[in-house]
Length: 146
Image (tube, rainbow, N blue to C red; front, side, top):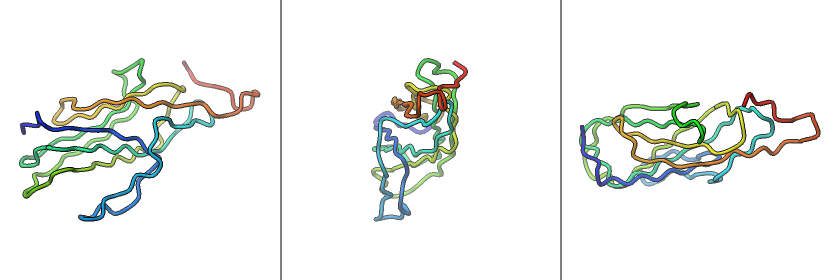
């Protein structure tokens, strides 16, 4: 497989992404955040995860995968998104991979981890949080299974 030892990866969670991503016009992240609000528990959330890559080797095909798991159960993924990248020629420099995470069910408020793997090897990990913002008067109380 391709050598990516010097590659640097950063993960950014946001409410969404806007733009085409065409050369010269990078997509714009909408509402970068560390927390996602949950009006009821459990709930399905949709958001964007941007993975910024620098010094990644694009000369050979790559397998890129993103997984999300509860911080206290890191081996139980609640969402996995992945794909294969074809080889690219010429100077690539920095690349932004945007993952649209849609209707992922979160069973409780708390910490969640994002894992990014390249060719089945973890290259980045970060944490974000979900917070319960609903009413506690009994109409929208936590109905999670945990």
